[in-house]
Amino acid sequence: MEKLKNKQTKIIFIVVSILLIMPSIIFFITDKISKTISTYIYLCLLGLMIISYYKLIQNKKEFKNIKEFLKYVIIISCIFLFMIPWTSSDIFYYMGVGELDSVYGQNPYYVTIRKFSKENEKNLKNDSILKQGNTNVWANTTVVYGPIAQLIFKICAALSFKNINVCWLIFKLINLLVHITNCYLIYKLTGKLKFSIIYGLNPFVLLEFLGMLHNDIIVVLFVLLTLYFLTKKKNIYFSLICLALATGIKYFTVLLLPIVIFYYIGEEEKISIKILKCIKYGIIFFVIIGIEYIPYFENIEVILAMISQTTRYAKSIYSAMLIINKDFMEIVRAAMMTLFVYCFVLKCFKFLFNKNNSIMKMLRKYNTTLILFLLILTNCQQWYIVWLFATIMWQKPKMIKNIIWVSLITEFANSIYMFKREIYIYDLYYVAIIIIMLLLAQGYAHIKADEDRSNQIGKTSVN
Image (cartoon, rainbow, N blue to C red; front, side, top):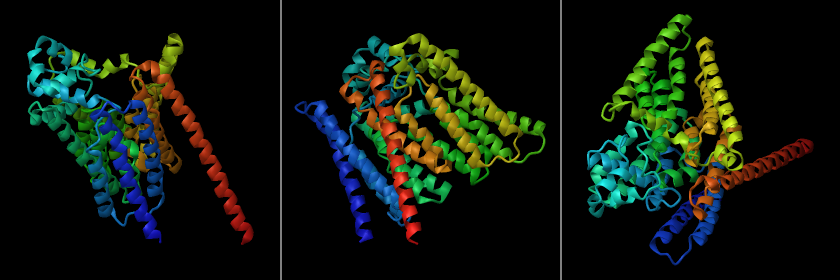
């Protein structure tokens, strides 16, 4: 009977996954169904998928081993290959800057899609990738990602031969393979299947990275490899290379560098030797980063890519405050920045003077730092939450539950942009939805805890 229920849950999850991708396909095929109706259907299906997901992670016997689980993940992932991006258009920007680089030999750190397209309008006629990229909200912005991300975009565009459908499929296949690899690496790091299930079947992960094709999933891959080589193989050099590759996509992963170095140094007695080793490994790391930039470096303007997004406000606490009072927002932002820098520097010094730096304690502190970093971002997209999943297995049970809740709630709250345009004036609704849903989730958790406590007391009394 129990096996039958387990099988039913798996089948329901597959069916809901198939139904969930339909609104995006129907909306793009025909204009007879309004986006509002499609969104309501989508939200109902997302709710069903979340319920099925929770049933899967609560039952430890759903999958016998990692092999069986990976087969199931492949089936689910293949379903999301057919989902058309409709909550984010970032993938078309990836394609556009890749095309700009591979086909036209332009340096996307200095030349924008919009500028090149305006000066070479004839290229738009036969190039569907560049044409679509030119309509993107980021078309007037130079590349905001690291050189490893740009290399991936370039390769995908080169293999597509100006065909947007082929390029889109290549990105889909890459993210699918990365997703499956991440599930396996999580298992290799922990030896526990439940963490692979928490990550691999999370609706937020499936939608944002197999559906919308954001590149943060590749960052997670390199972070997992960093931790694998550090904790399992004790190889600092491979670990630094993988971390540099992750930083070459999204710069935030540099926050993990102190963890990698101080954990490897271990129980070294002398502070002076610790400092020298920190300098040594730090230099190696930044030399690798420098090598990554060689193909694109012309002058110091390339560094502007790292700070260009700080002038944009999207889905952050600041954009909501910006609508109410700009001066107050600036004060809060300055205070948050100061707090973040103070906490980060303080933790680095603690690692330096502490002789017993366990990986679990260090990664819990890193997790806190990362959460604070997310809060100070002016452009804080919901898919950034996946950054926390790379180290979720070392967190306390309550924190694990909170990360799962936040990932699902932010995905749900993002539905506001299906009704409205993705612009900061709607962020107040987005933030409000998240706060309300988090409060409801916490209320539900407390009620459930009280019920469990009452049941336990009842059983004790009977005995």
